[in-house]
Amino acid sequence: MSNQTISTNSLCKYISKSAVEAMLYEVSASPKPGLVDRYNSGAHQDMDFFTFMSSSAALNYYFYRCAEKGVAFANQDARKLLEHLRGIGKEAERDMYQATGGVNTHKGLIFSLGIISAAAASCFFAEGSWPLSLERICKKISQITKGITIRELSSAKLSDIKEEKNLTAGERLFKQYNIKGIRGEVEKGFPTVRKTSFPFLLKYLNKNQETINDILVQVLLYLMTVTEDTNVIARHNLGMLQYVKSCALQALDLGGIFTKEGKNYLQQMDVDFRQKNISPGGSADLLAVTIMFVFLTQDMIGGLIPKER
Image (cartoon, rainbow, N blue to C red):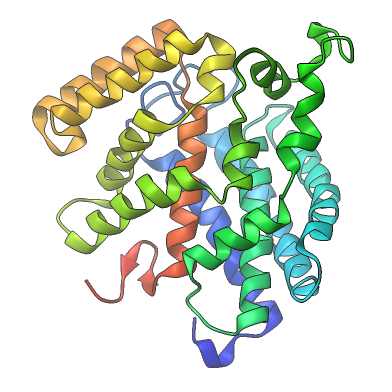
């Protein structure tokens, strides 16, 4: 996308395309232990690869609308933007459920990628340069979501306010373990992505020695070693999260998907995770976030192919 020819419409279209493409790349990367991919449904009985296709297609216009809101609020108080995004997000959730027959495939990414879409559009129209700066996008994200963790999770600490059965998964984990989940990650400007997955993804893409599929699986393994994955904890406990991290580390020690030994171990991990009902969905979501950040901050000739290697 040329910097001289970017209109509001073309910018919003590109951002929306990037968000959907990031979701499609994530689900297509295979094998992903415990997660839906092209090979199996992982630790999920109610969805498969094609459910994700339908859900992704249904969300295209949502990300466009988020980008539009980002443009509209480019020179305004970023905190006021969040409430406008929430309304659009609720509509997107309804579209997702309609497309999937009531299955939650992308609720987390509706939140994360929607905010990124708005922040990216806002950054461009405030600064006028393309590609965008990762640091500036993440700073804008932090401004948009400032205080979200305190506002939405702090009441869970007071047991008298809500009975345990009425707490959301995020509230319950915050109350039990003080884990802030995706809200904390977003409010801090995606530090897990900035410090871990984004640098690794760029390094492997620029080396151009492995397939896109294998690069994405390898980056997912790195994410699994550091992500406080609330999907895993909600299904199990902190002990199982440590188990996931240790398995990912073992896979990487064997070379990950880049070696025969690592590939064999990944296959064993997938069987093991499916049997134990482990789904590292938080790491998968951050992989999609990482991919979208690359689309927004790097010159690409198509997909995840850099113009210059």
